[in-house]
Length: 87
Length: 147
Image (cartoon, rainbow over all chains, first blue to last red):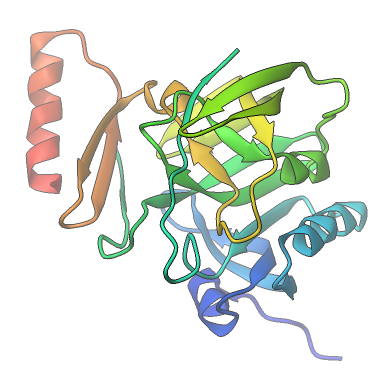
C-alpha cells in the first residue's frame, strides 16, 4: 500500500466542502499555523468527527486539526453568537 | 508583531486556535467575537481532547437572547493570533450543528494584546502592550505599513 502524502490544509477543505474534517497536522507555516496534513476522517456530522478525535489520540496521534469546510452557518441564516456574561 | 490574513468577504472572522490538552494538541477554528466577554469552546471537543467536564464547575451564561448552562474548563494552553495563555478558563457549551466553528474567541483572551484589524483588506495584527514612548512609536511604525 502506498504511503499517504500530506497535502495543503486548504486543498483538503476545498475537496470536502460542507463536511467536518479531522486532519493529522504534518507541517506548519512561518507563523506556526497548520500548513499541511493528512485527512484522517470526514463527515457531515460534527459529533462523528469529534469521536474520531478520540480514536486518533488512542492510536497515538498527537497533533490533530478539526474543522468545518464551509460557512459559519448555512445560506440564508444569520448568526448572533456573543456570550454576554457568565456567573 | 503577529499578523494574519482573513477573507474580508466572509460574514465572519475566524482563525486557527491551538489547544493543548491532556491527550495532545488539537487545532480548531474559532470566530473572533469581541461582543463575547468569555471564550467558548464546544464541550464535546474539549471532552475528546481529554478534559474532564463532569468535575468542571458550572456557570450560567447570558447570551443575546437567552440564558444557558455551561461548564468552566481550565485548558492547559490556548494559542491564537500570536497570543498564548496557560491555564486559561473557557466556557464549555454544546455548539449547534449548523454552526461551522468550534468556538468563540472572546474578550477575555483577546485583551491580552493590542488588536488591530483592517476589515476591508482582511488583515489582523496583534502587538504586545507598550509602556514607553519609543516603544509605542516603534509599534505605530509597524502598524501603518502592515494595515
